[in-house]
Length: 334
Image (tube, rainbow, N blue to C red):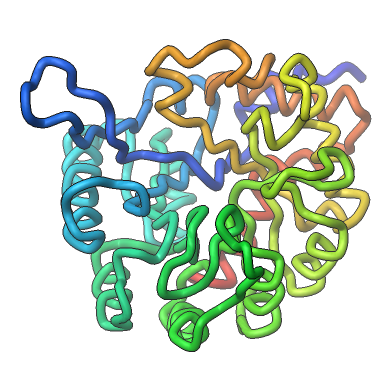
């Protein structure tokens, strides 16, 4: 029997584990102020892509001006205000039943995440306060070293968790926050996976067996450990993480990464975390910065169709497109 992939996509739960939401964008018409904070909810595109759950990441690691805690609060206020002003399309969620209710109401369920622990400084109290403000996941690092751990890009010494970082992981377990190990060094990832009492995720990454040599593409031993600990590995759409040649950065190559992750980890431990970015979709970067066939969130139905074309059972497609992340978040946030 022939499957209508687009109809099937519209019926299943679709979950994207990572999209930048608050960003700095050039403001050319101001004399002294060179940067401003904007918000990229992209609700129309998200809905066009059939996405039910969108994890929105706030990053302060590379910002200019304000201290990271103040910057995070500034961006968080803007994001929350935008969600409130678009209440007919999106709702902030902190529990699984709210996610299911949002899908039933045809609204996007928004989950808030920090991409890097810079805003909490060295204070667990700040982590608890951001939890009270709605944060339910946190990436421990961005590319660079912070007080919690080494980032994978800068990790020249291959450092892992600091003592404070170990306390952060334990506190996130206690609060019910998803620990995101994307962007960490290999050592840091393994330390988190050993320490954490709840499953961790890589919210956006690639597979080293398909794309050797990239710092965001991880070896099979990392994938195996994530699966052993009940975690989920989410495949990114960043072209350079998927292929060394920009011409090979295609939807088909994206599915190659999914295929290998499933082979190594099992179908219960693979998901999607695009990292679609305003810098790609709004600021006119050259075409090689786009993944051909999966340029933006409205193309997610193409992933469902591609998985079906590669003979994935429909139950497996459901898991990869969203159910695996639903199950993990259910375990962690309740």
